[in-house]
Length: 446
Ligand code: GDP
Image (tube, rainbow, N blue to C red; front, side, top):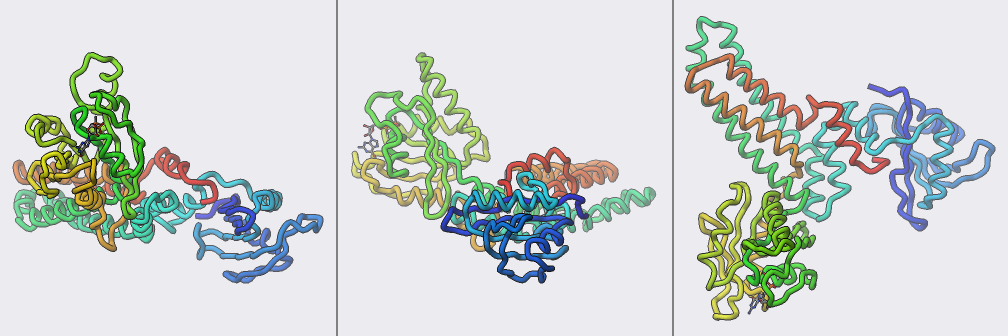
C-alpha cells in the first residue's frame, strides 16, 4: 500500500552539539531528494549535501540518505536528512521539505505506515514505542526482542497450531454423519491439550513481558508502625516517606520508582490497613485497597509479635498477586536474616533499620520482575495479556463442550473466537480505534 501524501517530521534533535535528523516518507521523496541534492541521489548512499532554500540561501550542511521503496522502514520511499542538532535549523529544513510537498507527520505515523505496509506487525510496532520509552536496561532489551519479532513468532506458532485444530473440528462438522466419531478421536483432544499448554507458557512469558516493560508494581502493606516507610526508604535510598512513631502517619499512597540492577520497580507505600474513624485516614485505607488491586506483588510488612494477626491482610488478594511476607525488625530479637518459600508467600526475615536481609528481598523482587527470563525474554503490553486470557477462556470452553456434549459447532465457534483474539495481538484483526490509540501514544517522528 502506498499513500498519496508524503509526511515529514523531526526524528531527533539532540541539541546544538549533536546531530538532528529529519525523516520524510512517501511518493514525493524522490523529487524532494533530487531538489535538495541537485541530482538524483544514489540509493542507500550517504551524500554530503548543502540544504538550501528555494532561492539558494544555505540552511545547513549535512548528510542525505535515500531509501527507495520498499526497502525502507515504512516500506515507502524514505529520505533522511542529518544536519546540526539545532531545533531552529531543523525547523527551517522541515518547512522547506513541507514547501516541496510533504506535510507534518502525526505521532507514530511512520511506524503506522510501516505496520500498514506489512513491515512490522502490531506487537512489533508497539515494541518500537516501548523501546523508546524503556525505563530500565532489562526493559529495553525485552522491547528489542519484541521489535525483532520474538513475541510475534510465538503468537504465529500458536496460531498455526490453532488453525490445524480448527481444520479438524470444521471437517467433523462438514461430515455430520461421522461427527461424533471425529470428535471422539483422542487425537483431537491431544491436539487441544497441547495447544492449551503452549498457550499457558506464552501467557506467563507475556505476563513477565509486561513487568519488564512497565516495571514490577509492588504495593507495600501492613499495620501502622510495622516499618513500611522505613523499608521504602531503605530500598529507595532516600527519605521520601515520613518515618515516625505515631501510628497512621502514612496517609496517602507514596510512590517510588526504583531501578534495581536494571529492573524497574514501582513501589507504593500504602496507609496501614486498619479500620479507622479518621476520615483522612479512611481515604488512605481506601486508596491502599485500590493500590493492591493493580499491584503485581503485595509486600506485607510485619514483625515477629504481630505476624499471626497481620497475615489476615493477605487473605482477600486476587490470586494473580504475588505475595511476600517481610518479617521486619529482626534486629530487636537478634533473629537471623533468612528466607523461606512457602505455599502462601515468600517469607523474608529482615531489618529495614540496619539493612539485614534486604539483599534477599531485592533478589526476590528482581526475580518476580522477570530478571530470570534469560536472553529470549520479550516485552509485552497488558492488552496482549488480556487477549491471551481470552484465548485461554475460549480454549477452555472448547475443551469442555468437546468432552461433555461433543458439540462440534460450539467448539468450532470457540476456536474461531480464539483465533480472532490471537489476531488482535499482531494486528490481523484490529479496529481503527485501537490503531488510533496505539499510534497516537508514540512520539512525533517515530
Ligand atoms: P510504618 O507506619 O509501617 O510506615 O512504619 P515506619 O516506617 O514509620 O516505622 C515505625 C517505627 O518502627 C519507626 O520508629 C521506625 O524507626 C521503626 N522501625 C522500622 N523498621 C525497623 C527495624 O527494622 N528495626 C527497628 N528496631 N525499628 C524499626
